[in-house]
Image (cartoon, rainbow, N blue to C red; front, side, top):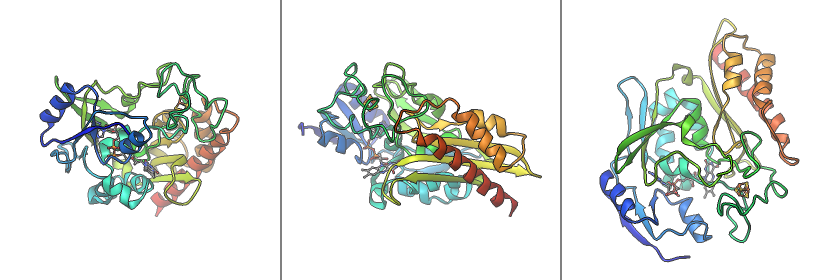
Length: 330
Ligand SMILES: Cc1cc2nc3c(=O)[nH]c(=O)nc-3n(C[C@H](O)[C@H](O)[C@H](O)COP(=O)(O)OP(=O)(O)OC[C@H]3O[C@@H](n4cnc5c(N)ncnc54)[C@H](O)[C@@H]3O)c2cc1C
Ligand code: SF4
């Protein structure tokens, strides 16, 4: 492992200035992803700037009735927060579906959004990988890809984004806030992750050196009846092979409002807007849910070993929306 420096920072402008002065520095959240990647040589920073003492560890109500979640809030504190549990239950469920208790105690909101793909070629520096070494190729397409993307991928990369939290945040229209040397900025999560195209190494639209300061959730009454369902290859401590964050408002058998986002099927949390449009104003029936899932998944371009995800996602959407319909009727 390459030698590196370590420095704690206590204020946001100081953190941004330090990163600006040290081009090979990285912000350090809980370190649960970055340090693993440093051990394997995928990441080789010269300096770690520990952001955990920054005053970004609060969850606060916004004036319009939403929530602002600081970037250094741990996954555990986020999942346990009463306002999150009560108003955005799918977010609590998504966070609790990820990693382990110990990891969630360390992992931060900012780090979770920026965690890297779990593609085995990306983490193995002996292999080519366009995301790690641009132009070196994508061996996953002809090789091991059973848990790779079916939506929005390209001939240059078929990796998925591993975050569970991000899927629920996407369903609820989260906005990422950040700070740069030129001042603060914000990005809707829908614009935060870049399309893969021929530049899979460029993952987000964050300006260079930006420090994520938090995530803002707009008010979403529909989110009170919401659920996150994750399918994985073992019951705990595993990444998703497919997941759904869903929220539903049904009145007199008609869908008044619906939110739907998919995980583990694309390079980013996949907001299922086509399905949402089809469902809104229509009947809340299993047939309608399946048809909406089919419409969303019509864009899928599976590889030989991950075509199962199309059926998996269709069944997940149908089951979760049916459960939410029953919950709303109680
Ligand atoms: C065994 C294991 C199982 C896991 N299972 C799951 C799972 O099932 N689901 C899931 O979603 N996740 C899972 N994870 C991933 C885990 O959730 C992430 O490692 C974690 O959320 C990353 O947060 P962190 O604060 O530790 O980030 P770090 O490792 O500290 O940082 C990750 C990246 O974010 C950058 N960064 C951190 N904070 C900021 C900031 N404020 N501004 C700008 N950049 C920043 C860092 O520079 C780095 O590039 C698992 C991890 C492990 C090790
Ligand atoms: S899928 Fe992406 S991350 Fe995996 S080998 Fe191909 S380019 Fe690399």
